[in-house]
Image (tube, rainbow, N blue to C red; front, top):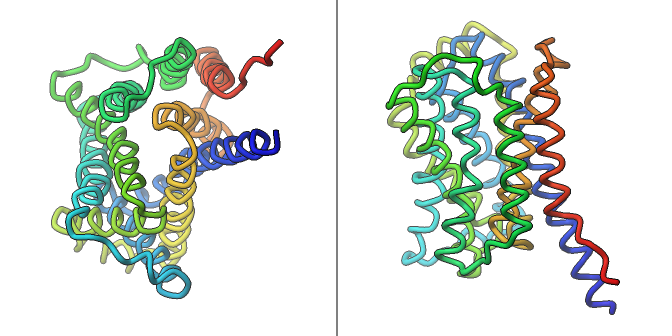
Amino acid sequence: MSNQNANAADGRLSAASVLLAAVLWGCIGLFVRHLNAAGLYALEVVQLRITVGLAFVGLYMLLLRRRSFRVRPRDLWCFAGTGLCSLLFFSYCYFTGMTVASLSVMGVLLYTAPVFVMLMSALFFRERLTGRKLLALGLTFAGCCFVSGLGTGGGLSLRGLLLGLGAGFGYALYSIFGRFALQRGYDSWTILFYTFLFCAAGCAFLCDWPAVGAAFAADASLPVWVLLMGFLTAFLAYLLYTHGLAGMETGRAAILASVEPVVATVVGVTAFHEAMTAGSALGVLLVLAGIAVLTLKPRNP
């Protein structure tokens, strides 16, 4: 009985870790808006965010967890997957897609990620597609559609569609490659460090460095914003998500993380005075209902 209680407590802690990570990701708009106003966009924001996150992770490991730097060369493909195939590819598709399609449509296409995660988890990890998962998936995806305001933007080009689906697929790959790394015995710190290292190294070739230098020279407060963005939305958020992923199925973690657009909507309403439509309110309720279906188990009679 005590083991059951301990397992239940661990499960709740894992779920709380994933939900808190999603909350932090949902708050990234606060920082992105400020950096956009300073003349930094897309890959420049990604480069600064991930580089700061990498510095925090590396400093902590250097001081307290030096053993976590150790990796086997044959396993580097796992971290190339989380860093390049997932984090960098997702960011490139998502931010490029914003230039050819409306933000609402791109937001919906991004949250096709749980679909990809569930299908790939069933293929690679033999996770069952239960009725509870499918119901929760339908509720959360419908909620994301309403939250993002699908139908309010213009037509979607083939390029926009492919970029949006690419963003969702890349977003989903973090859970898949992260699971492979966990199965090989690596802890969350190792996964975080090498994910950020691969992403930062790859993004360095695409970043507009002159624009970064000009922005820092023009705005003395920019370093503070960048440090906070990197610590909260990269270092802490990914640490919490990876920790939660170790204690639950990959598909379940992906659905729980779908609370991110709900948080982003609340941030938009409270911080930037964006209008909360009836559709957005319904979307928030649907996402919360999907999370409740997934996490609240019926009592045995």
